[in-house]
Length: 104
Image (cartoon, rainbow, N blue to C red):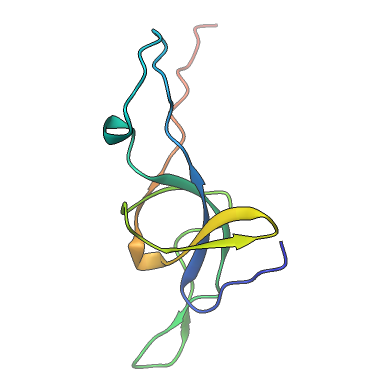
């Protein structure tokens, strides 16, 4: 991608919720999972108002994040629908589920 966000902005690719459950029940739009996405690119960070130093972002490319339903600005870059939002619009980072240790 030939786009680099500025300051504390983040480019997110939306991940759509499942259309059906494993049992075959169709999920209506109103009951789908909350907005999730994968961070595609991040800006260098925001400047601290007091010292002027660059404060790096907490998220990085590849992180799966949860964000507000109406957050960000929708854009199309290289034919791909993306969202550009400030880091503060991101509610949290989804961690990978812990793998259970198999008995050896």
